[in-house]
Length: 402
Image 1 (cartoon, rainbow, N blue to C red):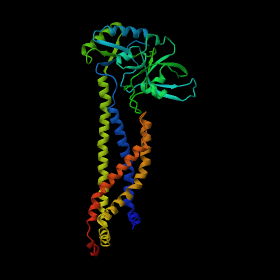
Image 2: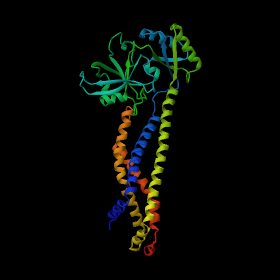
Image 3: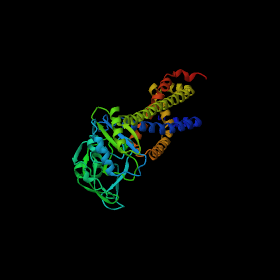
């Protein structure tokens, strides 16, 4: 005989306990699914290969005290002076530091039409030698040259994109090379395609940033940044002093300098991600322990309340495995309404996280399904002890008075 009907009627007689379990399981489902998904995303990012050798790299952030804006001639002058320093292997100007979580949105379309579908990429204005400085290999095409740098109000005509960006735009790097695309309805040509790398922004949506290297320099900004590759395994204090002296010699009115080592940026970024992921895992374990204690305690309480009824079932011929199945079924029926409500809460919470954390991915139905199966397995494991205890109730208990 099916045990489903009796179990449902038994649960309905415990409305208050059932409501409390439903509420707890709903919140547990929402939190467990989002905590596990978020920690997984953070751990994936914390082990992300950046694609470049970062140890010899550092950036120098300049803020002249009286500058109203910079010209590319000033930038070229600074770059020329920095290349004369013995321990400088290569130097380039760059709008954003690599691995800094900063980039400029760059929307690309295949037609010169404001209504055309656009692909969102991440860009940074750079000078020639940027790929040499980063030691980021070209897989197709050519590097940027001085001829690619726009003069005055000229529009950018040539760009370099990463392999991931080329695939997003044209499905393959080979199809993307030399193609004309449109940015702000102006044509630009893809002249080179680089190997994938960590990028400027650390986009949550993929394992590689969709990068655009845009030749040019912001002549309005009163601050700019140079990226320097040292000949030594890592930049030395002597190199920093030499850079400071070289720049202060030409910026005589005053200069504020800020040095950033890329390994430190990497540590700051990934170290923080690992801490957050670790905290989420600890809280996830704590939450699972609460679920185990709640389910096991409630199940044991119900088993103790049903001892005489269980003894009657044993006396009527029910096997131990049937009793175990009865108790496990009760716990599944008790948890399912809360899990069903929790699915809606989980999706809503994930949508809220996505609205706050830019580019954070939406939880896939497959991931949510795996989480629900794991939660159901946890519930069954929590009820296993009380179910086994129920199976040990002797048939003779049916004849005893309580």
